[in-house]
Length: 393
Image (cartoon, rainbow, N blue to C red; front, side, top):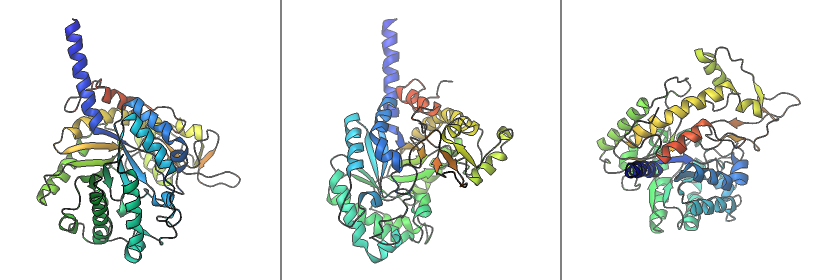
């Protein structure tokens, strides 16, 4: 009896270790002028402690150029230093992303009006920042992603400008510093200008790991918490890499998520849920107090579905050959200026503050764990089955 129990424990530990190497979380966004910045600066080390409690072994961390170099040649690394030191102590590895997700402004004001402007007029500014960034953290970070979603957040760039002015520059710097491996931006989020197919030949030899993002049924409600569409999407992308002669490289899904609850005070999200038969009895408002947002039926419904979806998603995707890591979006709710249970969030109204909020977190804005966080912990511990094994019902 005792011998059998030990064998079961060993099997569970092996499954957990396998998941720990493949399951990853996106950290809070450090973006200047956006929700998430306050908690990144003030609660970053606390969030690392929650990653450790869940068993998370990988973290995708964006490095906002706007936050880190507010004046030319004058750097503010302190918020990052604290997070990276905490990750080192907790045994959590980092995928570092160049730039914020969508800073306001998108680049430091001293550097130009846009990233396209910098690449065309002052490319040395960006290269100098990459050099400083890699040099500072090359002892702790060994994976570098050259930009997040330029297709959405850096308008005006072309595909070739991205490859020549950002990806190749970053690759050269990382390799010269012997700092590790390079990922391009997610393929599906290459700049909208130019021909996406040009990427393959132009970028060949200047990255080490494929990168993609995936949100199934964006803008539509989902009711089936399985990941068959995501698995099909991963296999389709990997077939594309093989078609272009890049089938020898691993792939990381650096963003994936259950799309809902981005911000239930936004008009387009409300209109989507009004079409959802499960939500017809819900009365939506343009503004909510913080605690009302966290208790909203949409937030509760989405988290319950996502918690069920996680087990199927990680089981499927990590069983696909070459799909090595999957980074869930996102770790914690992002409230502009930090979460306040009594503050009014949503559309503007005379006499009331209006604040942005994003409710994608597996940890709620009040720092309590949602069902999704507990589901992740169970997956990593091995109690929900390892890659290739169905999660326990």
